[in-house]
Amino acid sequence: MTNQIGFSHEYTKLAFHLFSTIRRYDRYPFIGTIHIVNSPNRRFRAILILKIKMILKDIPTPFLCYDTDTLNRIDAIKTLNSFYKNKIHDDEKLTILFFEKGDEKE
Image (tube, rainbow, N blue to C red; front, side):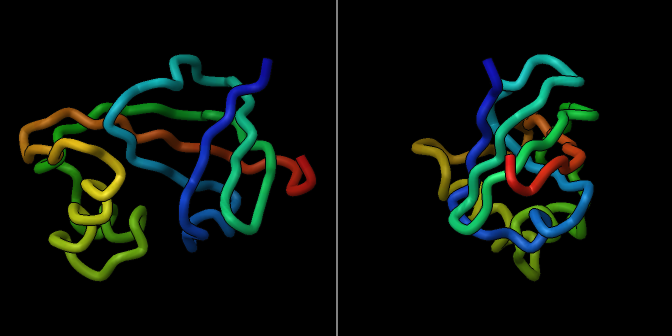
């Protein structure tokens, strides 16, 4: 069974061969697994190549902004929080997933 990972927005990062996503919950346990990536305008395969855990306050602002298509840390954190019922705290550990894009036609 192929794993699925969804994006509610057509993020700029999805156009690149390598892209990341920051997630609160680690539901993607195995590096090397293939995932079907779904976004509003695309569907393609990607392989999970790296996964790291970082505390929110330790994630560099430029990376947060890149990942969320925002211009500053406050907006980046607002974007992250918009996906969850409860606010993400500065000392909370998040999972950063890195993918390598495969076939655009899935």
